[in-house]
Image 1 (cartoon, rainbow, N blue to C red):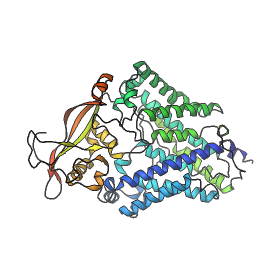
Image 2 (image 1 turned 60 degrees about the vertical axis):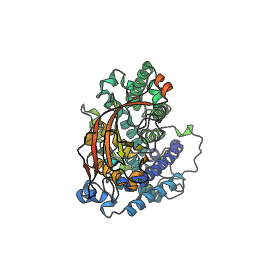
Image 3 (image 1 turned 180 degrees about the vertical axis):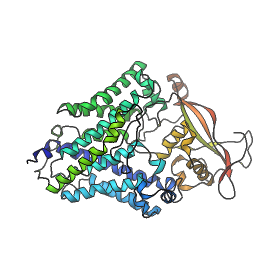
Image 4 (image 1 turned 60 degrees about the horizontal axis):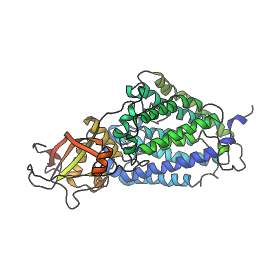
Length: 483
């Protein structure tokens, strides 16, 4: 039996670019974990990992941290992931034997899986599972001196299809504004974390907003099927995905969701179009063929659940059917909010509260706060606290226990927690009282922008956290005064 079909040298360049881009994304993900874990998940974090692993067994959340946890060990795990990712990004793994290359790409996948499975709400975003599923498939792509395995290339196409088609179907089955093409009347203003150009996108003519939605439907409902067509049609389809994802990058901050979708689309591009020349390629060893085919059979079996989900009327999105985050379901913005709300934290150093008490506002790195501050460019970096506060503005149930802990840390002036913020209004000593209020935000009009220089107009609509202070045992307690 001939195995010539197993590898396709025409995708050598595409695989190389895909691997470099994915390694860069892995590196970013580990850096984000290093920068934020102590305050979010550390021994004294808002949702400590030691408390989680005592409550949840290994079989329910496979992770190295079930074996041992300390903040130093977490830093070592994330740091190792970052170093290995940098090695892969630099191409130092390309000359390795197939077995060594496979093992090296397995390292960041295992380490990041260990983080995600104990990350709780901070790692509950769909792009975490998408990175893990993409990273798992990348393990089996092989080094630069062998032909890219065709079964893995097809699995990457299937993953990209699920990402795009799943997002398209959740829209068509969800909010009616997707069907009448009006969702972008609101989305640029109400999305989780607007970017520097979001104000301008919001003020585009409504007719153009309808064109945006129509283009989204075309790219997510029609184009994914063309990905499986012969070249050059597949490359054209991948180009549509890349262009629309770049449009989303320009219009808002969605962590690395758009970047990893672009990376997946690169794998569908005809490598002969890229200005890279492959070296003399060697045959894949027989054991590698067997491993790839066994993995492919496993992924096909696991795909039953996301495929069934795509066909169901009650489609769910961003769900993992197994604890290894393989063959997941994806999707985003099945519904679009019509008004924007923000949770604003304020403190005061006053010893007693009066109607004239001066309250000072905490400023976050990414989410809207000061109306005169232009929305920053954050993506592909992921500000986990800022994102979760957007969910809290939709419903207090997203705050769980961590938001009370967050208030306690602000009142205590906790240094690690304050590192998550852009500006601490109490640099010398922590506040004596703290509260959190809900504000309604909207973008300024062109006229308001010219007259005031502000990007936002806001007004208070209620309380999220009643005024509180620390009691003697260091717990935030309400003081029972009007807000």
